[in-house]
Image (cartoon, rainbow, N blue to C red):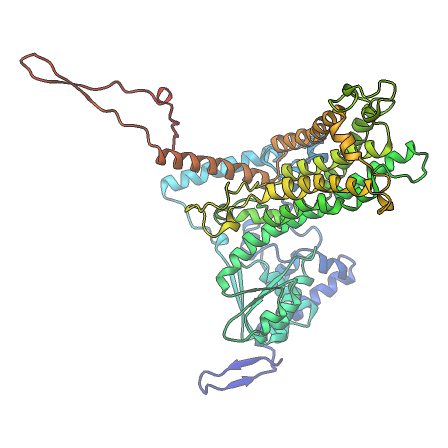
Length: 596
C-alpha cells in the first residue's frame, strides 16, 4: 500500500514516504479544530455530521470586500454550527393542511414549490433575471467563474497520506464533494475500497454507493460498495464473480441503472405493498367476523379457500412485478431526471404505506358489511330459475336458501378475489393487451409469440379468475364424494347452490367490488389532480406524447384525400372551364388536425 510514483527520467517506479508540503496545511487545520473543541464551540460528533466545505474563497470575497481569506479558516467555516449561510427561501406557513398531511411528494410536503417561496425572494429573482437579460442585450454579461465545472485529480501517493486520518479524510471529502468529477489514478486495490468507504462514512444519511470494475484489482471496491457491477472482459471473471450484476460493456451501465434498475425498484415496491395488502384484507375480514361468532375462532371462509389465496390472488401480482413499466424506455433516456424518484424512495415512504393501510380498512369494511348484511336474516333466500322459481316445494325452499356460513363465506371470498384483481389493474402503469390472436405473426412486433401475449389479462382473467372458478367446481365434486374425501364434507354442492340458484350472489359480485375500488379511484384521482408526485407528472406528459405520436402515425397511414378538380365541358367559345371542388374544413372532413 505504499505510494508509488513514476520517475519520468529513469522510467522506474520510486516509493516515497515523505509528506508533500501541500498536506502540511492539515496541521494548522487540526490546531484550529482543537481550539474550537476546547472552547466548547464544536464537538467531535458535530464534525462528522455537519456538511463539509459549502463555501468557497470567491463566495467569501463577494460578502466582504476587505476580508482576508485564509484557506485553513475557510475550510473550517462549514464545520462550525451556524457558519453556513441560511438558504431557506421558502415560507413554511404558506403550506396548507392537506400538503402537510396528504401529500406524498417531499417537495410538496416540505413546502419547496414556487408558491411557497417568500415574496421578497421572488422579487429578488425577478430583478436578477431582468438585470441578466439587460446585460445580455447590452453585451456586458461576464462569464460566471463560480459555476464552472470543477474536477479533482489525485494519485495514490497523495491518498497514502490522507486515508486513515479522520481529519484529513473529512477535508478530502469536503473538497471532493464540491467537484463534479473526481479521478483517482495509480491507486492500489485497498485504496479503491477506502475511497468508497470514505463516501459511505462522511455522508448522513448513508447514501447508496455503486462500484464498477472489470479486473481482480477492483474486487475490494466492488465488495465495499452497496451495489457492485462487474464487466466481463479481457481481465478475467474475478470482478463478475464478486459483483451483484454483470454487464458485457461499460456503456450498458446507463440502461442498467436508469431503465432496468428503476423498473425493478418500482415493481418490487408495489409487489411488497401488495403482498401485505392481500393478506391483511383476508385477515381483517376474519377478525371482524370474530364478534359475530362470539370469538370462537370459527373462520368466515372455507379452510381450503384460504389455502389457495396466495396463488389465486398472487398470480396477478406476480405478473405485475414482472411486466409493469413505469415510463417507457425512450422517455426515460430523454429525461434521466426521473431516476430521482427512486432515490427519494417515492413508493415506500411512510405516507404511501399509510395510504395502503387506510385502503385495507376501507376494503375490509366494504367486503364484510356489504356482503354479509344483505344475506343475513333471510336475505339470502332469493328467487332464481332453478331455485324458488322452480316451485319444487313451497314449504321447503331448498336451493333458494342462502343463510349457511359456507355459502355466505364463499360469496365474501369471491368479492375479495374480484376486488384484488381490480386493484391490480388499477395500480398497473402499463396494461399489456398483446395481440389477438397471438399465433398470427405481425411485422410490427419483433420476436416470437412471447412478445404478442396479453400478459396482464393472462394473469388476471386466466390464472386468477379462471383458476378460481376451476377450483370452486372441482372442490364441490370432491365434497360430494364425502365418503372418499371426508375432509371436504362441508363443501357439498355449494358452488352450484351459490352461483346457479341465487340471484343475490350475482348482484353482490357485481356491486361490492365496484364499491370497494371506487374508494381507490376517488382518492387517487384527488391525489393526482392536486398533489401529484414527480412520477405521476412524467406519466401524464409521456401519455400525451404517446397519444400525439399515435395520432400522427394514424394520419400518415390514412392521409386526407386531396381535392380533385372537376373539369366541366362548356359550349362557349372559350373552351372547357376548370372548376375546383370546394375545400372542406378539417372538422367537416372528419380528420383530426394537430397543431405543432
